[in-house]
Image (cartoon, rainbow, N blue to C red; front, side):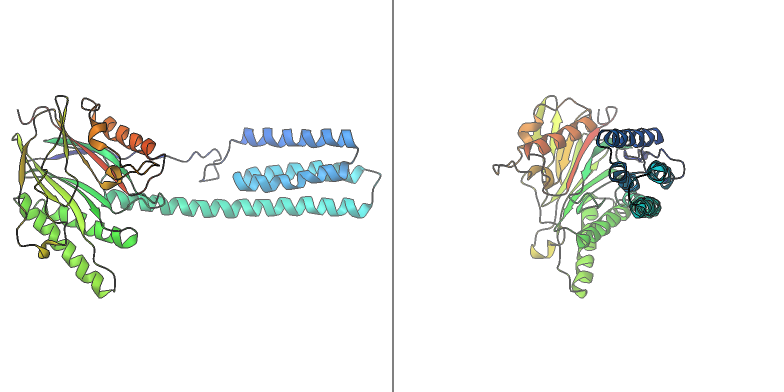
Length: 381
């Protein structure tokens, strides 16, 4: 029986919290102090040069507002207190000028300082809520799309997943790996359309794969189960007045034998990288996408190809192959793979994504999923 041995968590970009009272990243207190002192020194220098203490020191009243935008409430309170002292004391001791101007400036200093602290607290509270929501979304993503890399007795699967909308951690592209009694099954797919309805379809297909992969003894029966999940989802969608959707998908069946099974449902064929060669496998055996089987008479069948020890399969969605350069050319995937036949799975996928991003002048046009399936060197000998 093939076993799922490891699922490493994805790298996350953590927030740096330099204030123990704040759950959100804030600048170090020493930087806040330095900025405040430098700003004060500039204001004092202008006072000495112009002799207009009330007007120039009044500019410092706005310093707490800038602190509120970046600092913690405690740091903002520190800046506000400093500004009040710097503004009020010299103004109160100044013998010249109208007293009403000095009183108004002092009141402004106190009021702006208090408002800045309140604004900082409101900002921290709002950002903390966003952090909690994003943490919940990240936990949901780890349940919908398992973190990469994943290792089974047969293969190591690594890759890159980047939804088009960066505020959404899950898009219309899907993947999964299942270690089953019949070997390792690998799924990659692309749901038609974008937005929340596409994500709903993605969740249904991934859920059906995880259940059927351990129940169905053949890859074709597994694909039939995925077809049924898409049909049921579309039936429910029609009842809600939503359009039907199809899903392009590719399912691999890898075990201890050299020959490997693939069923392509309208998806981009995989590329085999081995001994310096790059070969598209399963070409010409594609079937209709999931959800469209009722439109054709012939059943879906398995294509076989040799997947020797140490070889790598590159699977991707059209977010990679349909990346366009500014002049409208599509990303030449097969040509760009030719120089990457002997690198690790993670470097293979990350270098391809970086290359495609450079090719498209930094513009991502679609959800993107790229998987490298590396045959375990002790298997398929």
